[in-house]
Amino acid sequence: MSDDLLIYDPNGGLPRLLEIMRRLRDPNTGCPWDIEQDFDSIAPYTIEESYEVADAIARKNWPDLEGELGDLLLQTVYHTQMGSEAGLFNFETVVKSVADKMVARHPHVFGDESRDKSADQQTADWEKIKAAERAGKAQTRTLDGVATGLPALTRAVKLQKRAARVGFDWPETAQVIDKLQEEAAELVEARDVLTQTEVEEEYGDLMFVMANLGRHLGVDPETALRSANAKFTRRFEGIEDALSAIGKTPQQSDLAEMDALWDAVKTREKTPE
Image (cartoon, rainbow, N blue to C red; front, side):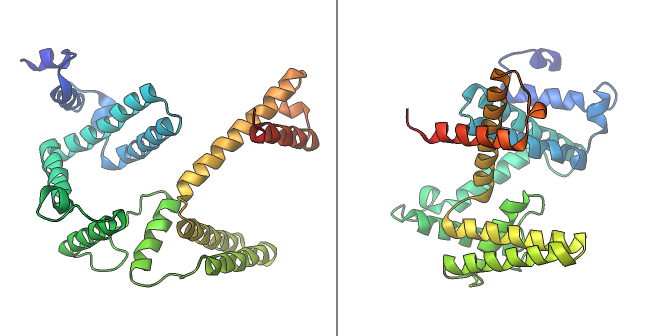
């Protein structure tokens, strides 16, 4: 099949997508915008598409998820095309790498290890294999390999988990709460007497301990904050709806009125029908 026939073949599958990206990046006939991009410029789009996948899952919108997964796949294709152009790697080597990794990390499925173990034991074994992989890459420090591009709360939890594996962790949740109160007090003090830079530092310390508390409680802070964002959005829109019903906008209201409407929305949500 010629390249053009493949591009317009609705059943062309992955080869079609790879060829589309190759053509978009063609220095002579491709898209000027696509030609100008590099790994750094595309990375933010990759992160954004990952969040849009998570958003579709949270909304349980499966048609949207199908589209968002396609967008995320396109990001992989984009990066591998640029890697191929630079002689670094290509789609086939990326696929081989991840397939080899999955086989190596699941000896209880693809090897001779027993599958008769708990989820906790499987997680521990997984971490041992990953630690051996990091050692092979000369990543010998405890915190090596925790990606700096992760969302800050997610990275905080990963850093804390790594440190906990070597014993650097509070054994009791109560100790984390004590530290949280200490950091909150320091932030209050910083607000009154320190510079904005120092206030930001103290706020960061408080957020780091909040992430640690989530870890001790078995709560993912990113997931919890996304849920809180969704709840805030839903309730504020309830305020707007209530104001609209009496011919007003938030700009025409005041805090006392909107706060009362917020409480009414909150009560409705918590009252069983």
